[in-house]
Amino acid sequence: MSNNVKFLNQPEVIPNKNYPHKKISLNGKNIPGGAAKPNKSFRGKAEKTQTNKQPLGVINENDANQGNIKPNNQKSKLKKMKSMDKVNNQNHSRHLSAFNVDSKSKNTKNDIKINSKVSSLNLENLLININFNKNKIEKDEYRSMFSKYVRDDYSNSIIKSLLEDEQINENYLENHKITERMRTRMVDWMIEVLSNYHCDESTYFESINLMDRYFEQCKVKNQILEPAELHLIGVTSMFIASKYQDIYPLRLKIVQDKIAHNKLTCQEIKNKEDEIMRYLSYNIGLPTMWDFITLFMEEIFYINCNHHHIKNKVLLDNYYEDELNDEDVKLGNLINKKYTKNMLNLLKYVCIYLGKMNCHDYNLMQKRPSLLAASTIFVAIKICEQINKEEYINDYFTDKLNDISNNCENDIIKTAQKILYNAQNFDTKFSGLDNLKKVHFNAIIELKETK
Image (cartoon, rainbow, N blue to C red; front, side, top):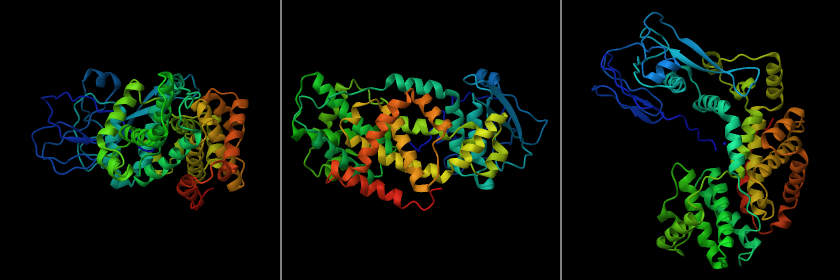
């Protein structure tokens, strides 16, 4: 999964005449409030108004669904309500807590009245955001934890859906006059372009996916592509991918002026964009190798029993509740001891390097993205073992990797051997292509703490 965490959209607000309420900014979206004039707000903070202070009522699932939310005036301290769901027939349950705060509570500086259909998850987002400054909670840790809560509940469905949607492109350069070497040079150049413009890592893999799928569709339509067309195809693929993946996408004028160096016109780029989208039936979001890498890493290393590697004591003590059995505790201790925060940071950088290196290899890119992702993680963790002189591969890791990737161990190892060969012989096999090492290999070398 990329590093931008998206939360659930806030449901529509249902006004209640009996209780005036304030205008609240939640996850960048405003919930309409009363007529009071609010002060300036920022993302994730409640805006102060001059309306009457009202206590925040306990919200349960039934009331939220029906739009009936009752205020609670009896208790004046922070109260956690557990809602337990059995997920995937596992031994333990995962929890989503709803918080109850009244006007006398010491934990909130702003008294808030909510009268809408609100999920317990969005309520927690609001209350924790209010206390960021007071408790010094890291936003990344908070967002990571609650995004994992949602992902935990739907992890099997997400993996199953991605595995069903993944697509294999076989011999997609067949009959084209564009050679493997030409494609590899374009892939390496994309690293330089997208890194210079600080695009998300997923944008790069999306660009390669769009370009290769376009080659495949042109082959199906018996349309022969000339080498002169490769520059326009590569530039347009990056342009489409950036609009799909990046919060601040590349502008057409920047693409035409700075990236294409005025060798392409804006109209040519737009025409090619229209052609690529029509050939792909406007289906951009097929899973890429990077999608599977991020998903597999979170499923293996960021799990419930190790608190998703959240280190903030305030966050753990006040906002995290779960029940774990003895096996879960032992597993959490194993993961915390073996797979530390620094080690996982190193693993992420190595996976980025190997994943982009895989895109250089035309033959490797004809394999299933899920198999490539599983093999990439396997090679990456072996490299981490060599760097840190620690043993990271154990029965838990191999069993979990085989299970979530839906691949047998022999297939993963065979593909991993090819990836490792490319890593050991990169200068020979891909001579003259320096952008990958210049951007990503140096980032690995510069890491100070890797254990």
